[in-house]
Image 1 (cartoon, rainbow, N blue to C red):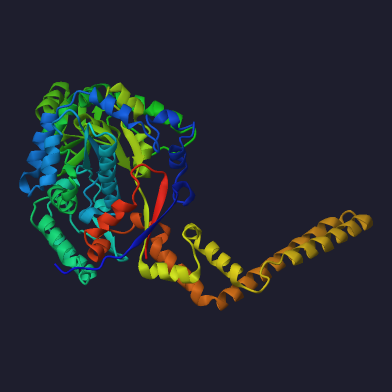
Image 2 (cartoon, one colour):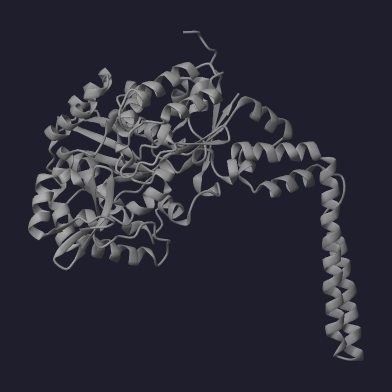
Length: 537
């Protein structure tokens, strides 16, 4: 392979709560503020991992079934030795996991998919150093049973939306990969010129053209990208995993306890915060072939919505015990399954995921499942060399980038103009004049005061219009600078959002290769309340 010169990066950190992209519930979560503190077990910036390890150690776990299922899942791909070693370690009672979860979006979906996985790797390394008597394995828990193809079947690549056009329904992980070859060709057209594009496209073709369904393809791709770090991919769509959740699912089907428990928690949360996820009466789907439909109870029958299927109590119990894989938890019970089958001590999620985990602590307690350390995933702003050079030339610092675009433009002009664009003296003069007129009107006829104040209002508005025209005229003098500011803001915050919520990792990997992940690993902080800006020097 050709040797490529790797650039040098600098890292700048600022409080995530100060970026303007942090919801009130996440700001309070990071600050451990009192209204939210009862809803989670460990503080997110200084968690007691020792206590989390001790509590998890006391939980009965079927590590043998975990290893067996994982070996089965990896049977169709070439398992990296680091992964094989970690699956072996999972069978030991002193091994624990750090987990993140995400659906099998085509080509990994958004950038934050990569960030979450790298953070699990970084935290596993950090815990290994701090707790040398234990082993820690990073795990990507694949939400392969999600049926939202509208979300999972598209990516944005270099400003263009690529969509997988397929009529398939049901769990996305089970969908046939036919039709993705054309999409890979479009990816090649977009990034094919980059130094590491060939390597990346080979991985995509191997994954999506060499495997029959999306979850196997995603396993292959993630293994090729992160297997050398020992990352273990877990696909919960397995009878060996689902059978361990039978007691919880049986209670859910017959007693519907989750709705009441989570409902009470939500009632308390809603006093101060927006609720992320609401429980249903039964928080399970029925999953078979290309169907994933809700289960609802109607008297003595359990019906599968949008189908002709229904079960009486005896039939349903038989189905549950003989085919537990046909029952799929929704967002309320997904975490219970995850924490039942894994020796997990920490879960890393985005803002929305953290918000719904805050609804679940009492449900975990009810089912006697240890509630893990919940951590907010790292967020990054990646500034390329040419972008950094333009920012430096414009004299714009890191914190200023997070301001509203037009406020940033106005401040740029105000700081560099010689003209008096803010008409403070003029406003003061108008106020003084009309105060005097108001006194004179009052002495003549009190009814004239209203007329004076109406004229005052018109005069103030006129000065405001002039002030706006002065600023607009001055902006024209700085046209190329202000246009560059707007262009840079759109590049760095596409559609007014963070890069990670719009872009895909592939252009970065195609340019930097595996070193892209190494740069992120150096920059990330596994436990933090900081947002990281990475600048190419």
